[in-house]
Length: 338
Ligand code: WQD
Image (tube, rainbow, N blue to C red; front, side):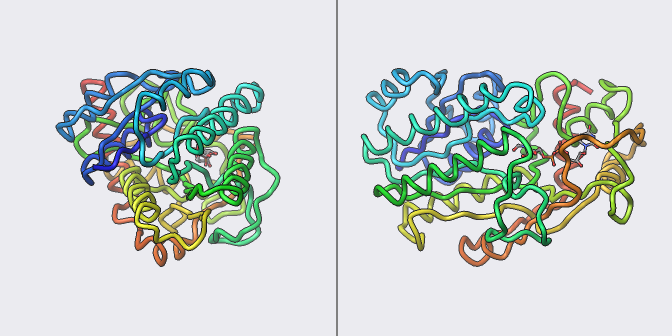
């Protein structure tokens, strides 16, 4: 049974990927520093899969601790989620992002070389494209000057992987996510934003649950059909499954190059106001929202060209945005005992 290390494996996407890896028959080891995740997510993973992954609380910025982990644990492949990911926070505190997102990647890759771990999946983001010139966005679209230090760390991380794969036997795939939403249908795991949610869907479900007065829609004066921004919202379970498929591609030596990149989206763009009305439909309740000023740094419209992942990985999304919103609402009601 191949052993897969999932860094940030108690986080939102990491925990959903750990479930899919266990369901696919892999042994899963999780490292998380619990800065943006809760330990009882481990029990949630166990309740879904019947298996409690090996877990170690490690801050990947501490090089000795990273080295020590690999001396004690055998690993065949790594899926690397652990990173800081709040766009706004990265603008206010760039050095935290450059240290936490880049040093940790280099320490992990050094261990890959030392312990001959050749398979590495990286959690990247559509944010590397900035505001694209053409839509839908293909993987060949130009990577533009990042809108934030967070986005810049994703761009630099990809460059670190390109250079490392060129110089060594490392085989790696970067997965560029669009907007992950939703939760596992068991409602045993889901998104757990700390404090005020930055992202749209958790803010919607918290508003519907009565934790927030109203959703602020950041602008309805954009050049889009209804004036609000357009994004590609992908169910987190579809996203998680893509990680297993990408890792299997490397394990089975099916990759065409030492380094590959794939967009992970639905290929469909949805506006903020369309998400709001879809949520009202699936939840059966009116959502209280108000239109406010645009949020600085928002791109107008971004959604994926998904043909490469479909062709090369044989992967495409199976779940709809309504499925995702329904699961997000079911999760919110579960954690709020509604
Ligand atoms: C989506 C849309 C907002 C909140 C970011 C990162 C990306 C990834 C996902 C980490 C936008 C609008 C939002 C609210 C709103 N993160 N909105 N009211 O900004 O597309 O992507 O999160 O990997 O890298 O850039 O996601 O959910 O913040 O916003 O109107 O309270 O919802 O303006 O149009 P975003 P988001």
